[in-house]
Image (tube, rainbow, N blue to C red):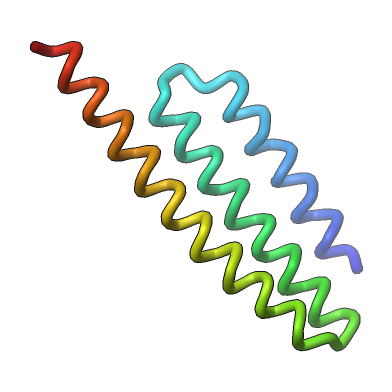
Length: 85
């Protein structure tokens, strides 16, 4: 049970990184780390409650998080390239 509190503490630290990040890439990395911590929280919660069907939500969230980070990074990269022209 204590592991959930530790994960929530790190989630809060990454949220601070997203808010105070000096660059947009730091914020993107912080959002990716928040996504990973949420996935870990889902997995630990499913393990504590002995409910395997919740792991399906973790897998779906992982796929959406990965696709979201790829699309956001691609969008930001194109925006930086346009400013350089």
